[in-house]
Length: 488
Image 1 (spheres, helix red, strand yellow):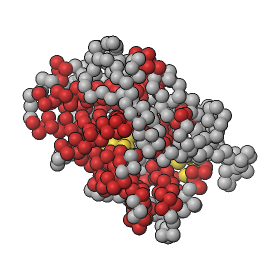
Image 2 (cartoon, rainbow, N blue to C red):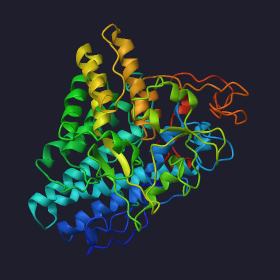
Image 3 (spheres, rainbow, N blue to C red):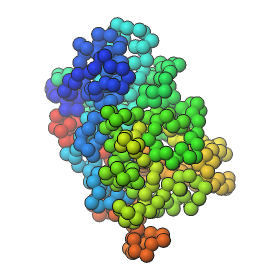
Image 4 (cartoon, helix red, strand yellow):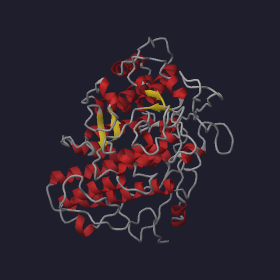
């Protein structure tokens, strides 16, 4: 039966074909008469698709694809959101993403599949577009990389771990441009969605060659694609490939200076950033995520992503660790909350979005080495990061393989706080969310009156304890999609 596919139908938006780089109107659907006139137009649609994903408001709570990163962190262990604060409290409480009519559920699905539909148009038609062959090959490779990235995100958050059940039903796969006559597809198995993402990313990796993005870190080059492959292989337990691609992704990048850790994680020119989305005063939708994550600026409207005091304990009072020095108790706005002052918006209330860093890739290497029983190599990678942060490097040679893996996973929490990995790490490792209440009446250090604030949600919505592989951890397919595609 022919049906309309809710997620793939888009209102045609005009694209400014005389613009340069990111000065492009976000586009959520392709006007083929314009796009396929020449390669420059196709390139602008690729840029417009990127901007659609990251700089399109659904609601204030859903500022583009940063919504996925914020949701992942809100549903994890270490961000302690508080009642009465706007933004992500329902996600934190595990009632939002299980609600098939919630705005975030609809927004994430729509962003992903409209982005996929645009890349499908580019991939299937770019070869026949007039223009420079090298430019067309690069456009096609970047479109494949973006489609692979989107499918990797979908299979990450809509399913349990690959190792749990690779044959479980996941999300539909579309590789052709949709029309109003397109028949809705059924859900594919987890392994097939990972395979589609891998196929796209490998094609991009093999065809990007020596492409130089010229400092425009939102563009996907070979290092970015290698980093995405490293994530994919980490999630599918292919440890040798994960280590190989992570090493390639990060080896050309330098570590940031320790003082740079205090600069607010708002500038993608940071030496350690492999991939990021730049923001300006007039292209700044994604910057809205700082309204939630920036807990120390007066300009921050919500400052809701406070840190769990038990998260602070993971640092073992290591005064030499630059990351530990980001903690500060709030005694002025949200009394007793623990600020983790990692994200600070710029003076014009913008901030670039970090999507991939050297540190993440080094931690992938460490975890992969540990799984490969190359424990000394794993320790060396872990200590490489810790040394750069000024952290202690205790002797770990007596740890078992599993103990060392747990040490690395804790280091991921410490290093990647607020960057969107909290829930994905819980899912791929088949762990339970861990949240503990602060004992009633506990005061913040140095105060005789201010009560310490920590987690307020320590149970699932059904009143039961957190457990591994809870369905509450998964993103839901929106009800509108299920209604319009009976093949789901």
